[in-house]
Length: 276
Image (cartoon, rainbow, N blue to C red; front, top):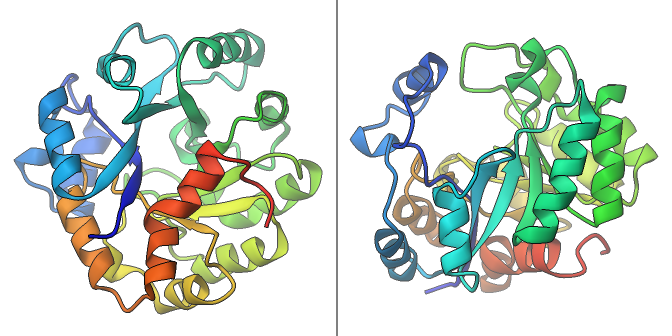
């Protein structure tokens, strides 16, 4: 069984009342069942990971949350878990950036994360100057930044998540380790072209069933993009079992599969990262 790092895992979906937009995503986009809104116990999550060859997982949390489930799990098993942290207020950035720096100092953080369509009414694409303090802080901390790209599932504006907005960002912040997450539908070819252009840019296949990934992306993975694509399930939105089963069934050479499922994340989030 090919080893894996799951780069985006939710462990608190059952700990809160889901907003209406999330219910719409479950029903309209993923046709999800009861497991969609689920918070696994630590032992349950570890058993799921072990059964599917997942050596490590990155759990999502937010600034301002004290000892939530993700933080408890990461503190209990730092050998298996680290954190992806969101919740920055980019319109009043300085308190959030101080909190981010403090959080990174006190916790095992693998990346910061922002969804452009999910705040500010989707009015601020990543090329907007409101992001620049965050970009600068991530460069200072040598902290990778994940940004949602592609049309979002909820009925909210999607133009801010066009990968083209990252073109100017990559020019101005070549030191920033930047990863597009949740794919790039319908702009896959544009995302690939940007990765060919910029050494510091990656793409994560979170929330995508591997069997539904476009052939253009699979071709890129087999050729010039062997070190550029990272695996994630977005559990429990999609199960580790389903995503990894479908991934291992694809027509990919063992070296390419291992890079996608494990090696590329090991380098980008836990190693030196940005260079070829």
